[in-house]
Length: 396
Image (cartoon, rainbow, N blue to C red):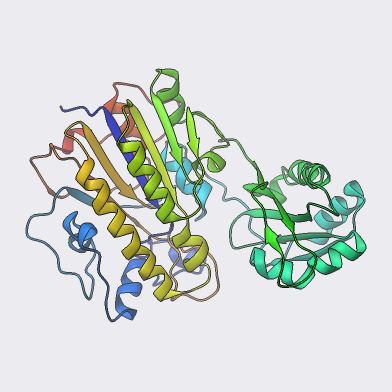
């Protein structure tokens, strides 16, 4: 059985390929992120994903299946409860989540939570609804600056976000309030995946700009993952994009923040030019954050085309000892109602220049095959209590 020196695992955040059998329980019957994007677009050019077998895995209106894909492909189903980013990534690395993280998209946070946060921070809270970060600043930042009130908001993800003007509110005060919010939201009924400090500058509408002093207060994974065993073995575990926040840094030896999904791919390409042994784990969030939640079909399609261009550049520099795996963490069908993630199967594409075989693998009932395969590749046992079986032996 061949083993690889380097594994690149790229998560195209929210690229679902069809509703799971229990999707109706989540209000997501009939969803299909990739399929519905294809149906709505007149043109859709993804030649590198096509070569890897994406259209063989999922029929697409504009993209034909290829006679001989470059690698292997299958659909993965989420075993855990939920459809959020943390659950999907944690399961990918071996954790089975039985209780989904809380979201407060429809009605904002409950009065009891807001009252406790207000009392403990000493701040009047405004906002308390689902909104984009730029919209909430345009609406409420002038009031926050004038009164000292505190903007609290959420999104379709499991997050509580607090805005603070760096000059009038102050970074240290913002971080203090977020630490209190993180403590409060450890209660099971209010447990969110992340509390996020959202500092900004500017004095009036049209001038507000979020700064790079954002800080995420994430939950640590509920157990040891494939990342931990790689790190313990002295291997490189390099993250790109949101991976650091999703795992709260656990099991990582290097992290790289990305400005965009294109930037994340550019970082990955540069990492591929370096010498290392281990895993490069990449999350490309723009598909989800900029297009899926905003129900922008064309924006999502164009982002996939931009990704495909960079994917072609990465494919050109992969070596015989490299393995590339492309997958997703949930769906976010831009043609669906609402703004939430969607409960879908996700694609799994695997390729190495040294592969001799190709074709469809049996569909798998957990995302955890990804982490199990990575650990197996380096001759490591997954932590006790994790799920997933390696498919390394099938990648010939």
